[in-house]
Structure formats: structure tokens, C-alpha cells
Length: 113
Image (cartoon, rainbow, N blue to C red; front, side, top):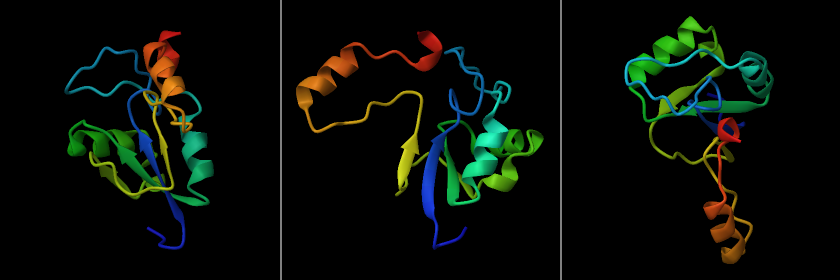
């Protein structure tokens, strides 16, 4: 990990893999098309940590099997300090609570649109 680089915390399910709310504890779905190139590009300028509630050993094995472990500096289930968080289930707070409530009520992940 390069201390001079900013860190990105990237969610696994729904961002890096093909995930459609069919969670299986001992199985991580296939790598999403374009994810390799996405990580390869980002790793040139950022430290990348994977954020997941999945088992860390299972996740690391999946990263290795998909040849993307070389782009990742850590796997965590903790919301570590990061420059940006990339997740398929989040809302960016714009400073307005009313907008945020509306965004919560109308939220759908990209794979459920």
C-alpha cells in the first residue's frame, strides 16, 4: 500500500461481481464484465480496499481466482477511512434531508431497475 495515494473502498457484491440479491454464503458470483479493467485503471492511482461482509478467506480466494488480487491492498468488513466509497447500495448525501428521504424511499440498486 502506497501511503501517498488516496484509498478507495469498493464493495464486492453488486459492484465487482454479478449480484442480483441471490446471496449464497459460500459462493461469490462471477466477476462482472469490465471489473478487471476498472480495477486495473484505478490501481494506477489509488490504493484499493474491498469492503464486504463475506468471509475474508473466501473473498481473497475469489480475488485470486479472478486474477484481480494484484490490484487490491486489503479486504475489510469495516468502513475504513477512505477518499471515496463505491457501493451499489448507497445514497450520496447532498446536504438536504428532504432530498435524502425521497432518495431513500425511491431507491433501487442498478440491478433492480
